[in-house]
Amino acid sequence: MGILLELIGSIGTLIFSSMKDVTEEEINKNIEFLKQYKWFQAYIDDVQRNKLINENDKVRHIISKINIEKMWRNTYQNKYRKKLELMLQKQTNNLW
Image 1: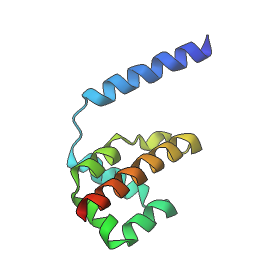
Image 2 (image 1 turned 60 degrees about the vertical axis):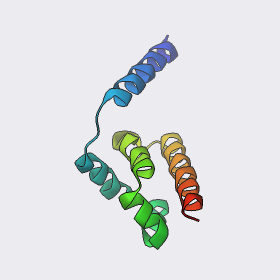
Image 3 (image 1 turned 90 degrees about the vertical axis):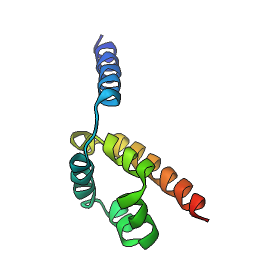
Image 4 (image 1 turned 120 degrees about the vertical axis):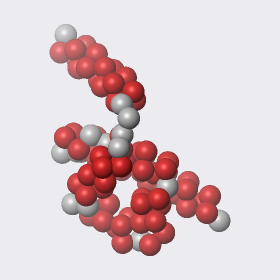
């Protein structure tokens, strides 16, 4: 029963978050939050990735979807770390 309620809650969160318009302020807030993680700091220290984080709409969209209240969970953090890494790689390849 608990798993079912958690699943329903997750589906509701997905639907609600996809309908929500995200502001630049919220994206920048997420970026500031992510700077506490070494893996994200490595992205910031890389000139090309830093430019993508600050200017690329697709990369910023992924950052906007991160729920910073869930980042303490390793599975959630790893999920978004991988999503962000894949998008950064894809957008880097598009630059060439």
